[in-house]
Amino acid sequence: MRLIIGLCVAALLFASCTKKQEALTSPAPSATPAASANCQDRTLPTPTPLDSTPNTKPTVSIPDGPPPCKLVIQDIHVGDGAAAAADSTVTVQYVGVSWSNHQPFDSSWDRGQPATFSLGQVVQGWQQGIPGMKEGGRRELIIPPSLGYGDQGSPPAIGPNETLVFIIDLMKVESTSPTP
Image 1: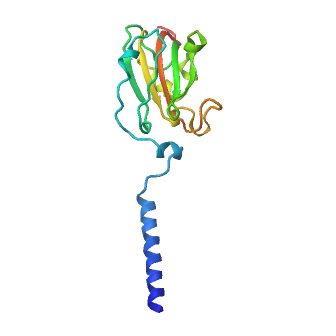
Image 2 (image 1 turned 90 degrees about the vertical axis):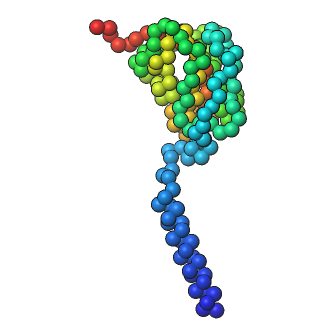
Image 3 (image 1 turned 120 degrees about the horizontal axis):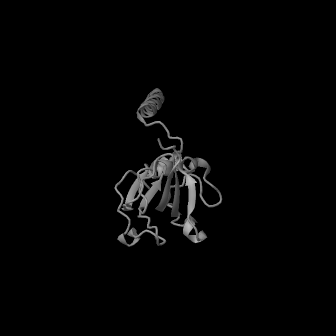
């Protein structure tokens, strides 16, 4: 009987030590655990060539598998006009789609007019993904939750921890900085 109790105690101590070791070597949890658990850093296919022509509503194609963990910026068509800066006001046409259900949640095309806004007033994914883009260009942004709407989402259209996919046509750039 003492042997059985001794073995049980040894097993419990071993399990406890193993758990402590796992806690020491495991990465720290992220601010959005559900998002980080369901993403994967990987190379994504370039968006389809049919979507390379700006000024026509694009079709957003989401590849199979988990979303990327980091911001993905892919030029579909490089413009030849002025480049957007972090402090620019831009006029764009765009389509936004949720990665999880492949459903559009917003589209300036559907409203029949482009949107104009300062890059300082949008989600971090746009603030990081638009600078450098040139007028006349089309760009795809895949925005992880941490650079989008995070844990809270933007109900009812965007759920919590949603990865967002945008195809954006940059029509006009206005600098908000005074020119010297």
